[in-house]
Image (cartoon, rainbow, N blue to C red; front, side, top):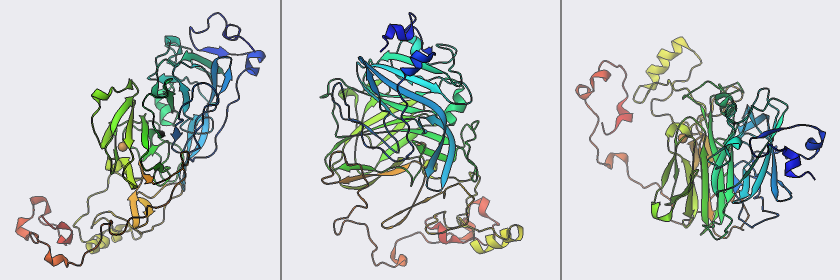
Length: 459
Ligand SMILES: [Cu+2]
């Protein structure tokens, strides 16, 4: 076994260094790969201080090996195929077989050695977002180190000085490489296992893509108008549910490397943000929330006591972010007579379907779709269509789940008499203002023929 000195030479710890030569190559740990897009079981520590490991939605934690008192990881940057949900795959760039890359877990005070092999067609680097590292390990290509050329392996060495939640991503052709999916999460557990322990610890990272229906590659120069809003490069109904035992203390850690903020909302509970990529939030500075905005380039982790059993929606609150592929130039057709609209459109496009005159809920409607895309709103629950997409999943809180059981417990069984239900009351009995008279119409509606006022109650 080589000493660190022999391994890196006298310039060790000054900057990330290229690894070359047969001797060093033989000493690089293997790079585990993952080909499944489902949440892998937590990776319990086999050495060092004990901790409760995280689980990554639709992802996994990267195995490591001990080399003396160094924890060694191996990331491989490479092209991957990622399924967003059944029916749609994307050609992305990621790490070790997946985009995003695996979660890296370690313990405060650990000395880590992270090998990075570049199998991309262009150079790359890895930046350790939010971590306190020596300057030469910070991974900004050109500024702190040479870029890692295709075929090269570099090694980063540093101590995990602080516990908390961090991210990793390239700092090399950043716009392209992040738009292609290159990112991952880092969780550093406190050395003191009694510091804010939780029973379940979930982690994911948010990224967005613009992929035209029928195609596979994200448009990397898109700035704002994305059509795939993802958690760990998955969209509803492809995002894993969060199974939780009733009474568990739960932590959810969320990173955001997309181009906009995401206000993440959990139904049925109140929580507090306990950790950011800047460290732990003191208890005196926490306040109750049910939605937390995760800004761009930031991490928010919240702790919640899961004391309310059921299937609780957990989603981004920007309503366009809980949709799958859609055009954004759709006119608002609410109130327009579908008959007249169909007649007018039919003259121009005989196969077109006139829709939207009573809202856009699609329910069970099916229509032919191009290859490799997803319904704008989709998913089914026990009561019918859920009409969601994108950044949406469910926290499933049940009595008596086994500690490491993260399998989907199925739909919630509602106690008798606890579900909102139909009552027998004709619509005419409900107090209302009545239909507007033509003369009450706003100016822009005057002269529109065939207005169907049924959808305009209360105006
Ligand atoms: Cu969002």
